Amino acid sequence: MSIEILRNAEVLGARERELRDILLMSENIQHLAENNDWAEAVAEQYRRRALMDAFFAKDCAPSESQQVAEVIEAVLNIDQQVTNVLYQQRSSMLTDANQSRQNVRNVGTYLSCSVS
Image (tube, rainbow, N blue to C red):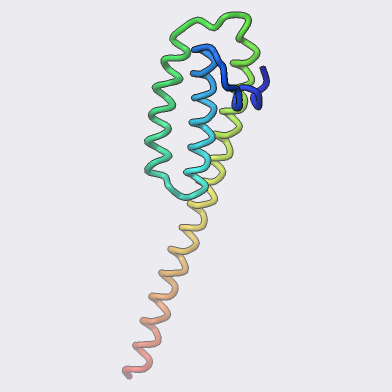
């Protein structure tokens, strides 16, 4: 079963539902990160981690190994995209902070010249 079929299937076994939940939680984490809702993204990450721990505590049947591998690959790709968003937002925040410091210095210089 492909990722797309798994994502949209109406009837799934228990293990497939857990696998789909891991995938959907990962996609939600990405959505939250893209919307700069890092507090909720972290909370969702903790919930996903608990679900993954429970899922992988059980042996993976040979018949499901391909699907599990596909979901793991998708989750890793999503996590990389989340990391990219994080670094982009961090860079933007550092740029804004540097600009704010420069503006404070400029105001200070202006005030020192205008008061004299």
